[in-house]
Length: 183
Image 1 (cartoon, rainbow, N blue to C red):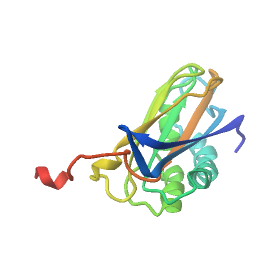
Image 2 (cartoon, rainbow, N blue to C red; image 1 turned 30 degrees about the vertical axis):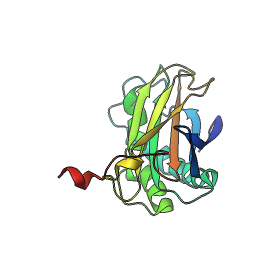
Image 3 (cartoon, helix red, strand yellow; image 1 turned 90 degrees about the horizontal axis):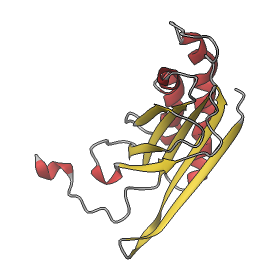
């Protein structure tokens, strides 16, 4: 799989709400920017050829890199597909909403929940929030969070950004009661 560039972002939060965060909360994002496999083809009815050509290789590339960038055990995760202005949102969705892509991350993280996702179309520098949830129990509210990402020169009109995000825990200083308290 050929990509124009990879971007890695690591965010550490050491203080939140005027108090130290211990241990420090870490969130990592790794994004690949590459040519949209359907660029210049007009409306493509069957997206399977592009999915087969890109999705698995993309998952295999990004999953180990985001876990390595996190540098600690993963507890929450998410994904994103941002399509350049000449593409369709469905192009990004086709690549990330397949087991050929997602199982690379689930297997590497030993996860059992579905990966939360964001998909959108936008110009270079578009801001997007990657949602994250707990990797084995989607009802754990402390791990429902997001990280904002923007890559100044991506996506070009005929490109796609595919990103994976991982966190070492939930929101810093979270104080919501367990979901079971409301049942």
